[in-house]
Amino acid sequence: VIVSKAQQAFPCLHHPTIAMHGSSPDACSAAQRLTCKLRSDMMRALLVKDTEFYDEERNSGGGLAEFLADKVALVEKLFGENLRNVTKTFSVMGTSIVTIFIWGQWQLCLASLVIIPVLSVSIAARVKNIGASERSDSEKGNVSADADEKRMAGSIIGEIVFGIRTVASFNAEARFYETFTQHAKRIAQLNKRRLILGGGAEALVTGATPPILALMLWYGTWLNTIGAMG
Image (cartoon, rainbow, N blue to C red; front, side):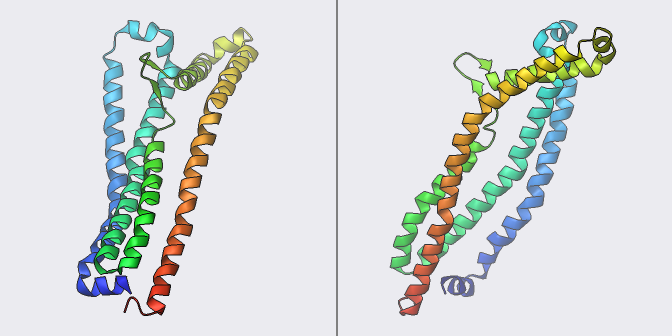
């Protein structure tokens, strides 16, 4: 009832929905352009580095390849899928709140005040989880242990791929495999607790939203049934 009244009074309320769906290809296109420029800038920066830069253990070929691939994928996800989802959520939430407070009854407006904090927490949780897989130690100014382990694992892969003949000639396959497995297990241990806590918190917040919205829809239907929204 509220939506029909609002659409009859202001047909332009359809525009947020159109803009919401139209923003999807725009976000993907922007993410592709950004990642393309990022790859080009990274390659240009690597080409002008001094040879001493590549002599450091942390700047091995495999480590740099792993680092660049991880960062580019993170940026593409941040400005593509996640940005699109956050934009859609804000669009739907803003349009719904404006519609309810302008054309809704005071009972429904009061009920919506309970939902707004829950939805806000849900959005904040999703935004906070964007890029949470990469953390830096701000106090020490060094990369996190997780990122360091990933770089070491990538470095081992690079050494095997680029120097497979040398590895085979020294029969060092088992040693490289054991070292890589240790780093992989360390990465899993570092990520396990954080992912469980973050996923559980987001599931709790996100899972509480549909029942509250369903309760609000039921309440609005009940108000319409008794004639309070006539």
